[in-house]
Image 1: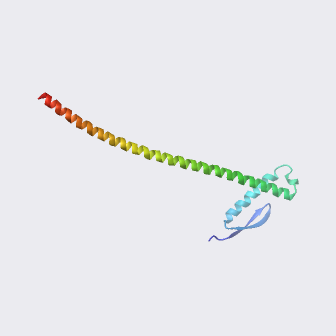
Image 2: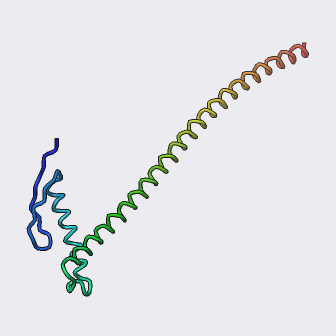
Image 3: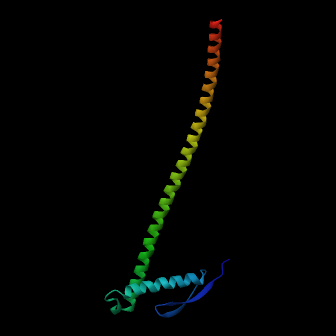
Length: 132
């Protein structure tokens, strides 16, 4: 079973202790992401004059927007992967089918060669008999 970890991170200039089953590195990455979002919004005109509740709502909305965009991109990648898997399956099936056709053609060519060799021997015998 996974061990629960805790890590102290700095979010918005405040030290916060995060806990969970992820690594400390992961917690720091999350905190860094939130701080980046806060910095992006702080750079927008008028943001600093907003009440704290509005700031929190805007940060939440921005993070949620990023989440839904990433989720949509993941769905697109999953669809692409499934399509490529299907194409690969179809190509493998076609390759096997073509290999079977080649084998059948080789077999038919050998049979035809054998028949022609037999016919050639018969014709040679007939020529020999006619020349006698």
